[in-house]
Length: 166
Image (cartoon, rainbow, N blue to C red):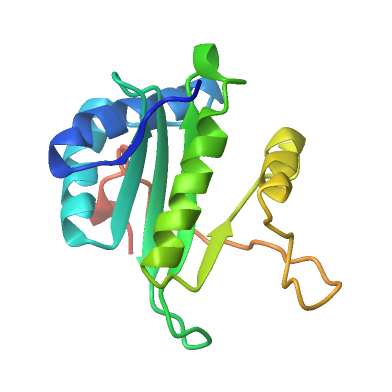
């Protein structure tokens, strides 16, 4: 049996922040900590361009999404920024339930495209997303897509004061 999946509200910001922190901690990625993340999550959830799904009671999984318009589509484009299921709860269909809820609700809301960035080494995640119908590029061509980024400001919680940057 899978966990109940629901959309997060502003009051859920501390829970979303804790799960995001746990995700980064598990994979040795930097995190400023849930106490720094929570106000930022609350602000972003209130903006309407960031949403989150939670699974379980208490929540044991989070999916964080951002939305933006796109010139090539008539509906918004969603980026699944993070999908995390706590280790003790993996293998129970929670991630699949979250993706299925996301896709159903996004389709009903007129979302045109859902994007996900997956690290090359994360073969299990790649397999998971392919199983849910995601492709590694434009499904109308044979070409793979690549994700490029260039950081212009330090991430949230970085100790470098912005006043020291040009």
